[in-house]
Image (cartoon, rainbow over all chains, first blue to last red; front, side, top):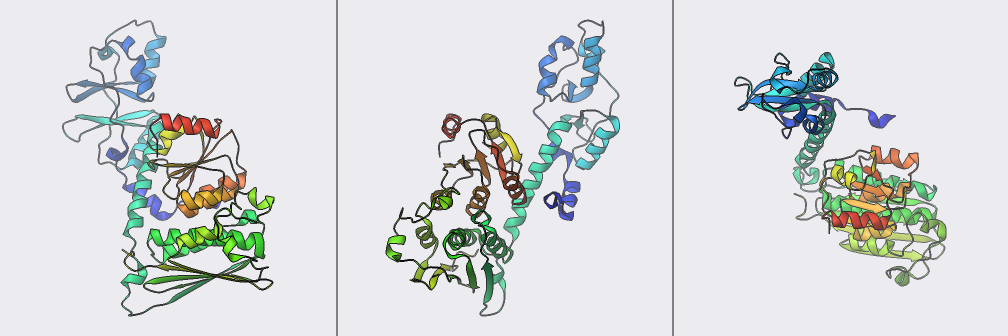
Amino acid sequence: MNQIRISQSVIERIYEIRVEKIMRTDVIRVTPDTMMSKLKYAVKENNYACIPVLEGEKLIGQISIEGYVDWLTSDTGDVPVSEIMDVKFKTLHPDEPVITAVKELELIGLRGLPVVENESEKFLGVICRCTMMEGVLAELDIDDKIEEQKDDCLLKNIQSSSALITLSYIVDQKPLEYGGEISSSIRSDLYKLGLPGSIVRRTAIAAYEAEINLLAYAGGGLFTINLNTNLLNMKIEDTGPGIPDVDKAMEPGYSTAPDWVRELGFGAGMGLLNIKNCSDNFKIESTIGKGTVLLVHINMEGKCA
Amino acid sequence: MNIKELSQVLNAKILSTGHLSSEIKSIYVSDLMSDVLTFGRDAQLLVTSLTNQQTIRTVEMVEIPAICYTNGKQPEEKTIELAIIKNITVLATKFSTFQVTGKLFAAGLQG
């Protein structure tokens, strides 16, 4: 399936994520004289990863989940943690790449590893298998947003004193359930051109409402978008049956939609009105037997930041 | 509350991950996509019992990052595929729309 393709930039970013970004710091820590019988809660709370044993802030040992289970099944009885804990074990540093942590966990076959400060060995947190992937995903998500914000508006940054870009899209007659494919392309193209989100969203909503109408009533149609530095013009035309009473069709709640349109969640009599509300200027011309033309104008002045 | 925490409140299955760490502040509840397009623009989650592809198209246009299907309805494969492509979180819960609304309101989401 093509949606699972991971882009090179995502892989690169995974390599850039450091251990400190995704480690858990809210884990339960214990002191050497804590009794083993008191660890039950800590084991669960720490995602069955490991329980760090601290003297002051310094990590001096750890109880791994494997070690805890060994103790449970042995006849040792209730003893202080210091008698059971591992004292020789692998630790991670906060500035190491997450990939290193992944490799270590795979290599040793453990469920978690403690993270300590480079020289002081001060305990900082734990990397555990179950929360690692979540952490990486959250990091990628945050990075995504930063990248989106970096995009500049193409039409505001060009040197030319005037510019005109024309985009056109044909809506073929298709079952209504495919409605939205064209609006989705429009939306994605406008983002690629660097238009601000507020403009793209209004255009996409108007386009989507219009696309549903084209498929439900007109057997398809044509979108033409003209863009210049301060205005977006979207023309939506069809050669359908036309609208008998345009004023009535603009009234909120007025609808002639048949059941099959309503079943898909449309036909509430809001479409045309919503297109108008998304526009700074809206015109509709309809001739019975010839078709309908919608003109949607959206001002970009001052909003293209 | 983020989407992940919200899914726990609703005991919901995550069918498409999308942006699990996205913060949810406002919710819109409707089975009428026309209404979502008109009034739902400030929401970060759509709660609905309609499960067709148009629900995903609608939240895509309005830029709502997550959708929660109620009444234990399982959306068809195409709906989930589209959501994955569009990076939209999809949750499915056994609770009714009314129960979902109540639980989320009680959990502090009142917008």
